[in-house]
Length: 352
Figure 1 (cartoon, helix red, strand yellow):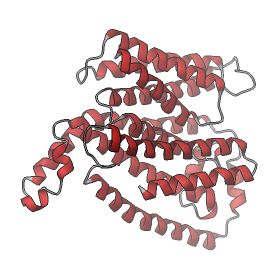
Figure 2: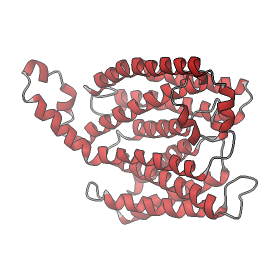
Figure 3: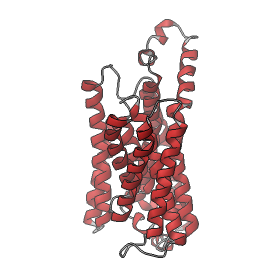
Figure 4: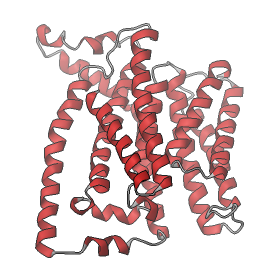
């Protein structure tokens, strides 16, 4: 908890650092990321302690211990990469400003494709929610059978969630996304605050020009967006995981279609932006189709009425289209999942 709050405050600091540098878009984007991360963590604690009718920790044991274990192992290893980068800089004596200037151009199409493909990793959350999570749960129980009672009884949280496996998978997903978020944030903090010793400089090739300085990378916005909606809505079973998976799927495929199709076939520009109407309508259509598809694939887990099958994807697709048209300063990797999941969650309480 302290690590996550501390990282949220670092993002808050970077937001005002970007404002000091005159990067208005980076300021609003970073500030929004910081506030959403802190708000979602705090709200989750309030929900768990006062509104959910079962007693659970923020991250169910043993995932809290595994989270701390990851941090203890990851930080020294990443520090070794930083030391190695310092040695390279001293050895070859390369002018960093010259390296940065190489990427001061419009992002080539192939790198744009690489960016969008990396977003597909988020779909793994669906498998952990509905497939792999159940297998891991059974694996924990199998291992505990071989341990003495004095040890196995310590794993109280796993036993108390046995009646509802989706609660177990909820905390498993929190752990996995939380670990990813911690690693991504650590690396991006170094990229922004100490760019010369950033050990992952090749990643700069898939960053747009505005993301090379004080603005958080798109992978950070995506991770914070996913982590936040999982904290906010995942505990509300059974509709929470359905809404989370649906909104993330629609956001990913809608964004991919809008960006790539608009860039290749777009001719009619939206105002003075680089976005096109061809890309906008493609994103809406693909988002709607992907939303219906994921609900069909998950129909074996929950019963969703016909109205929910069509209304939820339709509303989500329209929201994505509106956000794409508005072209906000906030990264759409953050705004899409947050806004879409929030609206779909409250709609689903009445119709799904």
